[in-house]
Structures are given as structure tokens and as C-alpha cells.
Amino acid sequence: MKIISADFIYTPNGFLENKAVAFTDTIRYIDTLEVLQKKYPEAKTIKNKPNSVLFPGFINTHVHLEFSSNRTSLKYGSFMPWLDTVIEHREELVGACDNDVMRTECEAMLSSGISTFGAISSFGNELEVCEKTPQRVVFYNELIGSNAQYADMLYNDFLERIKASEACAKESKIIPAIAIHSPYSVHPVILQKSVTLAKQNNYPLSAHFLESQAERQWLENAEGDLKLFFEKYFKTSTPVTNIQEFMYAFDTYPTHFTHCVQANQVELDYLAQMGHSVAHCPRSNRYLGCGRLAIENLNLPYSIATDGLSSNDSLNMFDELRAALLLHNDIPIQELASRLLKSITSDAADILGLHCGRIEVGKLADFAIITLPEAPKRVDELALWSILYTKKVSSLYINGVKER
Image 1 (cartoon, rainbow, N blue to C red):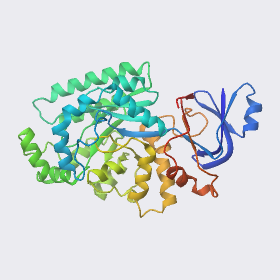
Image 2: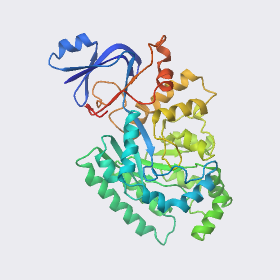
Image 3: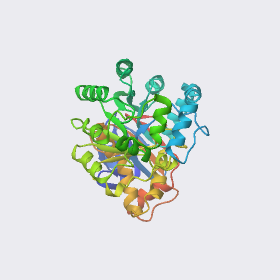
Image 4: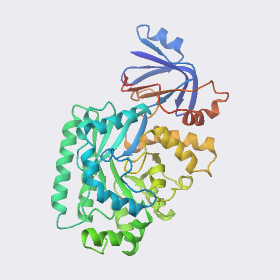
């Protein structure tokens, strides 16, 4: 048993002052330090620096590690020029992204308090790193393949990668999961197979959806820049599905849709009606010129996520939160700060079906501790100050073990 105290503790009911948490691998009790020391006299007490704030460990629901070697190879500003450079530099970027590179980025996520992340894996190359990293990893085996001729082969490879992640899950914090690359890149037959598989095994399920205007034009009208892309690389001018058909394929199982920047209100309302959620990646959307997801109009749960270094400059969660503060300038800043913190803690945990994300008795003992530069004058501004003045957490616990 251990006891950790802080000046402020972030809970589902707001910030508590001068409280402490007794924990093993899970949270056992929350009260004043004096009460907990009397209740557990043998417990080790962990005191933090003045002006400390104790949060649940943060959850990054959507990240690609396989392009972590990218710095200036890919073209930002617009989606299609970016996609062209992904094709052009894919082999060299993936080749340069060895285990050391990916471990470095896992460490970077640790430093910003990320105790859990969702890793989107196209090839399974990240599995060894994700197995050994201290974080809990929802390992999304990604399905891709729109050509019916190769669909069975690609699906069988996908199944082998799922088996590999299941084997690792037995002795690590890996949680096997399924990701659908996008509506334009997955054939409806294998899409339906994968949704059924997720449902049968209770795997978390994710899908990129309506990230760019080019995607919408292609799916709606078989026109635009993606038509030229498919004609050039795949010798086809016909989409394998449309927006509605793709959405309806997920009707029977809650799915975490990524981006949705170009989804209209009718489509977003339908996703909400079906019990789905959205991963919002502010910097990625801005860097690729995709537009702004109007989170103020969403009536479904959402998380804030970093995406990968193919469309971002860091995997630091505080960098992402500050970008969101600036991007969504029509929402009152104090309200937005509070919503953003909820989106990377309790909301993200609920979306992924995880038993963490809250400082609450019975939850997993994942803690991110930050230290503010001075004592806050008003408790109701703690959410904003925590985002603005934090680059790295002071310490991080996962399943009750100090990892930073």
C-alpha cells in the first residue's frame, strides 16, 4: 500500500484540495493525508512538491508510431500533396523507424503523462516496442485493402497480426484491437468481416472517416484529387463504397471514428445515435489543411489525440491541448480547458472500455502529477493553468508503479 498526496486532485466531481489517495495497483481510498496515514500506518507516503496537481494518467486514443522518423520529408498544408509524399517516401520512413526511434516516442508520451495509448499498426512492426513500453497499449491492427483480387490475402495477413498481438497480451499491458484504415481503402466484404470479428471478441474498434474534402468528393461523386490518385496508383476510377454504406457497416458495434472533419451534422448525429465516438486530432487536421472539427456542435463523446509524426511535430499531449485551445477559439477558454482534460481522461477511458481515467475508488492506479509555477489564486482556473504551464509531468504512475 502507498499513499500519494497533492495540493489538488482532479476527480469526476472537480478538483479536491489537500487530499490524498491510498493505492496498490488500484485506488483503495481517498481522504485527507492524516486519515489515510492512520488507516494504513504501514503504507509508504509520497509527498509532491508545492502547487502539485494529481490527474489520472492521460489517454492518447490514436497514434501512429510507424512514421516516427519523419521530420521534414512529408509535405504539409493540404491533404493530397501530403498523401503523395507519403507514397513517395513511405519505404524510407518506415525503414528508418526502428525500435529505438519508436521507444524514444513512447518515452516522449510518458513525459507528458500519457499512461495509455492507442497504437494504429499497419504492419505489426510496433508490436515489440508496445509490448515492452511501460504504458498500457490498445494495439489496433489496421485493415487495409480495396482491391477484391487481393482482399483475402490481406485479410489473412491481418488475422495473423491479430493473433500475434493476442499472444503478447498474455504477458504485457497490450489490448488487441482492430482499426479500419478508411472508407476508400477497405473493401466492404472484408470490412464487414472485421466488424463481426471485433464484435465477437469485444475488441476496441477504430476507423479513419471523412478526414479531408478530397475523401468526401471521391466517396460522394467519384471525383476530385483522390480520383486522380486512384487512377495513377490503382488503375481504378470507382470507389468501393460510399459514405452511408461505410457508416452503416458499424451500426452493430460502437466504434471510435478518427477525424470526421468533413462529416456533416446529419452524419455526426447518426454516429451519435449509433453509440459511436470521435478521436479529434487538432494539429494533424490543421497541418494537413483538413479543416476544423466543430466540437462545440458534437453530441457524441470525443477524445483528443495526437495522431502520428507523419502529420504532427510531437506526441506531447500538452502540446496537443494547447493547440486545441487556440483552434477552438469560439468556446470560452475555461470551459474548453475543462472539456479537454475530460476528453483525455474519463471520456477516453469510457470510449476504449478501460478501467482507468478517473481518480476514483476501484479504478486502476494511473496517476500523472504536474507542478504549477505558483499557487493558483482560483481553483476554477486550474484546468487552464494545468494546460498552459505544463510541458512535462513531474511523475507518472501506471498500475501503481512509478514509471517516471
